[in-house]
Image: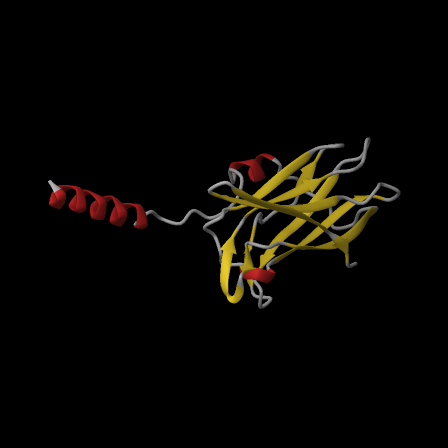
Length: 169
């Protein structure tokens, strides 16, 4: 009986480790439904924002890390104008581009929010990952808000914190 239990445990452990890693994101079809064309000559204000994200944080020492789930919130803060997001590029700790979440501009309606999720098991970004967002909005519109909400729970202990973007252009 002990051999059967041990064999079952080993089999379950092996199969659970063989799962394919899922690329982080809300359903990718969401981006294609939001696709929009923007003329090359327009009267829109162009901006670029930086957002720090932590897919891992140090725990106890510099040699031990704790994985986090990160929700990247993309928010249109205008009550009347549409926001156009041209790029959402994800970089790792070393500044290497990992992925761009969409290959065409998307729109967010007034006061609309969408999100990108970095799964807890997706640690490619490391302890210093970040996003660069390029966006356009009508002149006089409020700037968009990009926020990161990182969290994790292990047993009865929970951890969560937030970050906010900074305009860099």
